[in-house]
Length: 586
Image (cartoon, rainbow, N blue to C red; front, side, top):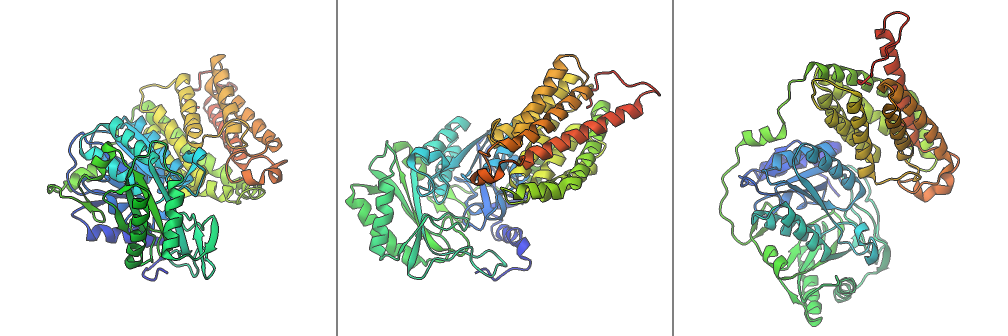
């Protein structure tokens, strides 16, 4: 177990700071992770990898020439927040676009996806390739649902080499997809791992047993088996991977025996010798293999085997040089240090001077965020109880954490444009709330802000575009549809009612009132639905008769915003009159 720390809550950040101090010739610290400390050629594609901490050498240890350009580093076994990914990608960007790559885990998909939307909205072309190599996590016909484990290395290495060779974003993305398609992994554990400060491992394997099909976040395997001999273990791993090989597999493979934390190198080498003989007997040629700790899980007692089936193109890039703190291959020409000022400048974009209209709208946004905070605080306990019926009961506290941070962040940049206020608020919401709702709300608030921009004037059309951007961010990230019993069941009726009212000539404040009523009505009707997405799905029957907490909180929030806008307009109108303007600021 982990023994060296001050405050366990600071373990990941403290370890990352120490890693940078020990490797300044390779990496520089940025808010959210690390980027190369050496020069990156102008126009080169930036490969940004990442995930939770606790997997060293993945992910920060793979940053350097010939491999990754930057790594976003989350807390222990937790996805980095969208803002962290965004800041690392901004600092890593060299003008050739950004490829994000990471293991296929729900939190990573949401947060990296949110960052991708924001980067693309700012004109930094960004693509994503998730790693799905773990054959134990889904059958071959559902390969897109598989997790990423040690196959991260093959995808990152070949994508990084392609970027180093000067391929454009299309080319780097294509090779990453191809590598992922031809990579398979399977892992075993002999005992679980222990988070810093915890007294016990996340799981135990019974004495004399082995757990097959584990993940790299402390997840136990899918089945337990009597502890095999080394030869039996090699046979098990090799046979299962060969039975799952891609349809276009050739006869040349990269083999990687990966230690997960406490299996000694001598044992890994012993196993690799058995694996290599079996692959050779199967008619395969093993090309430039790896054996050691490459993608770990803290102090887990376990290992995995990865096979990458090569073709001529992939073999060229697998063999290409790389020079990082933890992975070195071949010989690369020395790189000049990157100016610290260039890294700092990349982290923070120039703040645009707001127009008068944008500043006024920014002030309104600050006030609206305060109202959202108040209504969430008022209903926090109710939302938590509703979520506990078929979920984990954290919706109220998660929304409270997120909106508290969002309101404070918006207030901190009061006087700025609506775009800056909402971007700061959305980023804070995402980072503080965590979880699915944090990623979705943070993404949506940022998207609405970017849509509003910094204009000289605002109209109802701008309000419509902001609502559309808000909705797109949630539906594109969360992938939920109408009827899945999620926030989307209130969100889409809200959008449709708002746009219909505007199209009919109603002012934006009237459209908002009608849309908020539609959202609350739709949220109540989710009580009749069975959840098809999220953590409530396995308890679908228990959820029947109770509305979805995400839909309910959305309805409460839109209703409170509408009431606040009405009160503001009423206070601003001459005595006895009510404004009939277009209410675009609403």
